Image 1 (cartoon, rainbow, N blue to C red):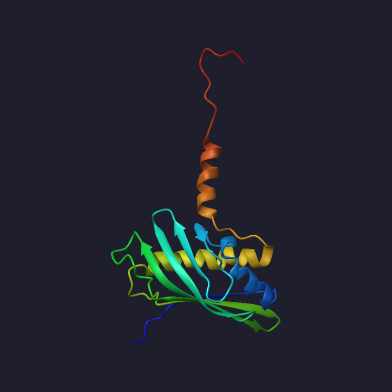
Image 2 (cartoon, rainbow, N blue to C red):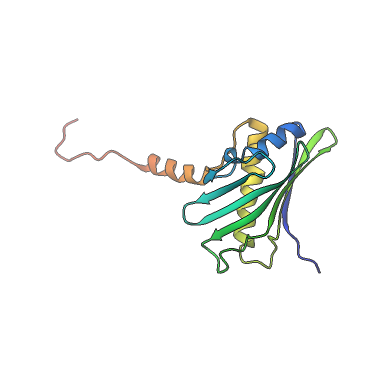
Length: 169
């Protein structure tokens, strides 16, 4: 039995060209610190989220309105034993017409159930691709830092001014 790479798909009413532009606007849908250009063939760029995740990608395929492929050149995931588990894997976005809609098919080739990162990484990809990227495509604004913002907002909501007992109203 062949292992199944992590994949997910969704459809939108936007054109393949609009979808392609959103995918290449990585900062608009993936959280963390992204350095380098993310929209030209041969570009190399890095993603870093605190000391938890680092990866360096190279754009190896860029077919406007149809396909984007990133090769992971280097990686570091601090929450698994093999910290470089992503090295040599490929992240693909295939875009195609499905009736009167546009389908986005995402896959992380090499992210299979047998690797330690599968559960955490597939869960994260699911959120970024199906929620943040999809929202960027459909509404023009992704949600790359949704978890961080929720935590920050919760703290702000719970913060109450401290009144001293001897203060008069």
